[in-house]
Image (cartoon, rainbow, N blue to C red):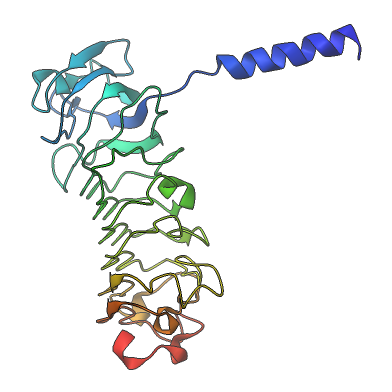
Length: 290
């Protein structure tokens, strides 16, 4: 191997090593008067805080409590800013309130060497209608975080990737996980397969009028008799639409949950208001799942 090639490879490896590992990184857009340019982080009382917040405008602060005054920041100019949190920031929940319309993107969920993970994420981005992406990386969660209910309800995301949930095997509750997302149209074929302990999928993808359903989002082909056999499952209103006529997406294929084996299961109106125009296998769905 030539000396030049060796040098090029060494430089490439050095560049890879120099890529910084991120903390929990989000993007915010502010415009208007002082109030409009002020953001308050949606922190919750679910653990010990000890983190540094880099606001994306050259300034930073330390946070030591969920109600720390330093969680509030005013930008001096209109614009879009990347905000990074490094350290322990265990609770996050907009819950359809606060500055939910100012957050526009999740850039990265963070590297475990930089960010301690979440103990609480229920309603984390609920109502953030200008949020367009769930970002790179996997949700970093502490062992105590076993619920992601209504995490992305009412957001502007258009796609959901299974990589997001790769750290979520112990999660039990995914109720309303991405319900009522008006432009959500694409999901990974294996979206929820990594959630191997989950029991509550009530309203999980409810009222998504553009979404193309996929048949194996919960299990691989051939696993129907085993995947839920030891669990008491809830699929109430799981994929309900407002009406077949309101559907404007690509016709999908429902996961054949009715052919699965359960310890027990709640099926009420799981596929309500679907039709042959929304699902390729609608005719196969039993009445108690409709």
